[in-house]
Amino acid sequence: MQFADRINRLGTESAFEVLARAKALEAQGKSVIHLEIGEPDFDTPKNICEAGKKAIDEGLTHYCPSAGLPDARKTVAEYFSETRGAKVDVENVVIMPGAKPLIFNILFAIVNKGDEVIYPNPGYPIYESVINYTGGTPVPMHLKEESGFRFSVDDLKALVTPKTKAMVINSPQNPTGGILTMEDLEAIYALAEEHDLWILTDEIYSRIVYEQEFQSICSIPGAMKRTVAIDGMSKTYSMTGWRLGYGVMPASLAEVQTKLAINNFSCTAPFAQKALIEALTGPQDDVKKMVAEFQKRRDVFVDGLNAIDGVSCTKPLGAFYVYPNITGTGFKSKDLAARLLEEAGIACLSGTAFGSFGEGYLRFSYANSVENIKEALARFEKFLVGVTA
Image 1 (cartoon, rainbow, N blue to C red):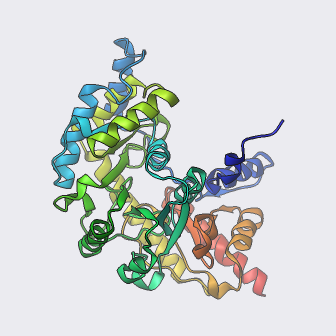
Image 2 (cartoon, one colour):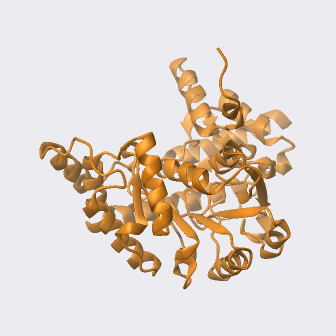
């Protein structure tokens, strides 16, 4: 039996492949420190869990509107309006089982065969995968360490052609932790206006920032007429398994997204949406504690990496990843990541898992304890000393 040709255009997300290999090694008795998966190591706050359980007890276990529960969409619209400074209404909001289906469905809805889509590289691998799947042409925007892994506006302008249909931005950014400034965002929006482009802004790490305030392109007057903002509950509220994401977009596109939801997954679990309401409107103390702990871990990790010969690491401003430069070790990224797992028991990702411009880097998640981070640093240094001795 043969599969459809389009399946060959889909990529993957290496974090889950590395996780599977790491679990297999652990099953053989090997000690592995997990720094590969982009998942907070904190429990979902109790008040959110209680809201979900209460909704189940009240019978919210059946179908619901495909765009989301009206009160959940209203909550998202109010939260988004307050946090982004952009007035949106219920008809602009669609709730889906995770942010990833939104990335897929938005690109599926706006990209025709041959359309070019600019996306960050290194960047979240699903962008390139889905652009390819739709028949579009992925156009990588090289994020460079010397510019803080931000978009270079001049480089961006050079990538725009008559075939360009959309731009994908991600701030705070996975895998680098880079953050776009308001000056960057204004220049990106001006370019989109000039060339009549869609903007897809992935803001899943919007609440996990350090030393500075999060800035959204949605706050620019007029931006929402051509912008789709994606956010969700997985990272901020440690709700990865709840599968809850939301998109805010022009109402006409929201209608298309609802149609795609009807054809694909029918609806998002209604009891989970009640938990979303509690998360966005309830106490935020657990979020603040988590971000403070992430910042402490980040500082330990960055200082430790910079103390290892052949390794250097800029300090990320958001998300929960470090993205060290390992060119001084003499290793290629994929080879070093594989050997660290197999020989040192450190699960991390090659920079090339996030695109071709990721060569020379590794990505470590610091969603793990300070104790384990320090042990990973010690193992990393010991491995490098051993191979160069």
